[in-house]
Structure formats: C-alpha cells, structure tokens
Image (cartoon, rainbow, N blue to C red; front, top):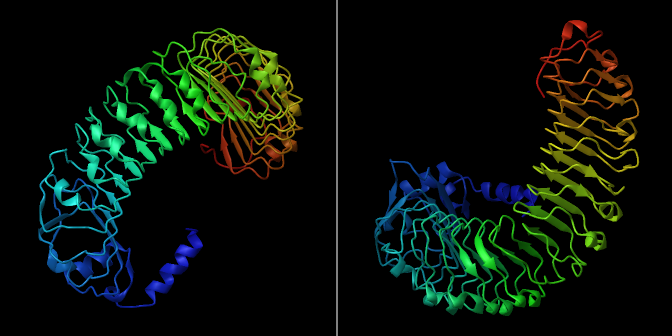
Length: 503
C-alpha cells in the first residue's frame, strides 16, 4: 500500500478517540492497554503487539483478554505467551503473527479453522512442538512461515493441501523434508535457504505449480538433481547458490518460465546443460554455453571459474544490462564486451589475474573495478558519455586512468588504495561531479581543475600522503563535506574556509 494511502487510513481510524472502539490497533502501547484493561469491542478487527522476542519478562494473555474481540481477523502477538482455554474466541482470525512464541504450548481448544496466514518465525520450536496438532484444523492455510526455527525435520504436510507459500529460511538445524511435501499440489513458493538439508525427496520435483525454489546457502545439499526437475513447468526462480550439487539434468532446458537461476559458488558442479532461453538473470561459477540466452539481462560469474577466458559469444547477449565478475581467474575482458549496447553496469572484483580490458561499451552508466591486482591500465574512457559512477578500489598495479577528464556525465568518482596512480589529469570538464572521493592513494601528487565544478558537494582526499597540489578548492562555494586528513596540509594553498569533516 502506498504510504500516503496508509497514512490517510490511520488518520481516519484515529478519529475514533476511544482505542477499544477502533477497527485497527497498530500502536503497541494502545493495543497493550486495550488487552490488559479488557476494553476491546466488536469493532476491533486488527491488533498488533510487538515485544522483544528474547525478553525474559514476557506477557501472557488468556481467553479473557480476547473474549470481546469477536471479529478480529488479524492478530500480531510477537514475543508473548498465550495460555489457557481459548474456546469460542478468535473464530474469524485469518492472519496470526506469533513470532518468538514459547516452546511450551499452554493452550487448549485453540481451533483456528479460518486461518490463512501463520507466521511463527524466530521461535524455539521443533517438529515435536505441542501446537502443531492444533493448527492441523487450519485447512484454509495458504502461507506458513517458520523462518529461523529449531526444526530438525519438517512436519507432516498432508493437512495443508492448499498451502501456497512455505518459508523455512534459516532453519539451520533442518536436515530432512517429510515425503508429504508432495501432497501440497498448490505450493508456489518453497524457501529452504540457509538450512542443513543434505538430500531432497523425489516428491519435491512433482510440485508442478511451484514458482520459487530457493536452497541458497544450504551448504550440505549435494548429489545429482534428477530429471524430474523438468516437470516444474511453472518455475520462475531457482537457486542452488553455495551448495554442493554435482550435476543438473538436461531437462533443465524445458523450464520455459524460468527467469532467474542462481548457481553462484557451486564449485562441485562439473558442467552445465543447455539452459532455457527464458532466463533473464543468471549466476554461475562455471561459464556455460551462452548461445541461446537471448533474453538474458543480468549475468554474474561468481567464484570457482577455472576458465581463463570469457566466451566470445557473450557479444550475442544483446539485452544484457548487468555483468558481474567476482573471484574468477579471467585474464582478459575481450573486445566482444564492447558491443553490448545495452550494458549499463560492469562490476569486476577479486579477479587477481585480470591484466587487460580491451573494450568497454559506450552505454555504461556504472563501472566498478575492485581488488584487481594485476590490472595496470584501463582503455581510454572518454567515449563513455553516459558513465555516472566510477569506482576503482585496491587496484594496486593501476598506473593510468586515461580519458577521465572527459566523462561529462560523471557524478561520483571513488578511487581508493590505488598506490601507483600519480596524476588523474585535468578534471575541469567533469561538470556534473557531485562526490570526489580519492582516498589512501599514496602515489597521487596532484589534482587539477576543481574550480569549475559548481555541483561538487563532497571532497574526500584523506590518506593521500603525497598529495601536495590541489587546484581550485578555494572557489568551491557549494562544498558541504571536506576531508583531507593525512594529506600534507601545510603545502596545500587556498583551502576552503570550512572545517575538515569526514564524508
């Protein structure tokens, strides 16, 4: 909901001055007062209480506090306890947020037959928790969130046939998925990321309505993914990022709706089959065949890449907008990258063997090079007329940045710990520059042309211990942030009349 519409709704609700007669109680203190003083009425439809989940001083509520709230459909009682007989209350409840609930279930007759959304995240509950038997009557349940709970294995899901979203993210002890997961034929989202899962039941590949399947950072998940995967015809998002899977089936190409595939950090994956042409976002550790990826918009090579070259067919990715190279062994960025006419962002980091960048596309808006120890120089940048952000971090061998002074669209220039850079040239043509951050560049001796930069707001030059000449600082009336700590200030003339402060 748009925040202005939300704010208007709250204003209308608050026109009722008696909290117990408002339809929605979202203020913690007001909601707590209404419950403790038992001032609620039939008009209350939504009530929210948010206590610290790990607090030792927990509030406990019983049937008496909720008896008058006959039409309550939304209840949030995070970090509280519910106890006693709840017969004939909360009958209309559709959404229950009970994060941080107690591992000791103290309720009887807790029958939420109309419940649609249940969130028990961040609770110290296991598969043996006493509350599960009470929630089996929730035949209308569509969303079950159990993130960061103490489950070692999942529940018997046969009672939740119409469930659409199952969130088990960050259940770090979770090792086993119950076979009954195959009964949830309407499941659309399955998130078992950051878990201890080792194997997956065959039934999981029969969920034909599944749209999102996320196993990110489930580091012990291993083995071969079976050909049954090809039956997930509705799948849009699939992540095995940082798992130990060893192979993917050829049927992967049949997933005609798949738009995002994340295989970053899958160093045990020996090879990749043909990928579906529907892909728009791809994270991989090994370089695949790119020929048919005609719709790809984002390509991320992340870790484990043993190849020394980027395939030449990367030039065929005519829709590519973002390219990331992270912790790969590539030595050359080939000229084919220069023909990617829609590429806006290029991010290269921790590529220690990168020596040459042959060409860059003129469409670039954001260029980032970090921890590329072998890179000595960049191609001429003057033709990058759309470049707005340039970041160069810890490129220890970089000696030249040619054409920098002609980047007329540049708004942010950030260079850090590039010790071999001695001179950046005249910057007087960088008419749109807002932030100039050149830090810890011990070889830098001179900066020229700042006087013409009327939009410059931030100048951070701290740690440039050999920077003796800075021209034009005195004339920067628009400057708001200025830092030259660690520079030889006594030799810099005409400093701006403002206190030194950090960006």
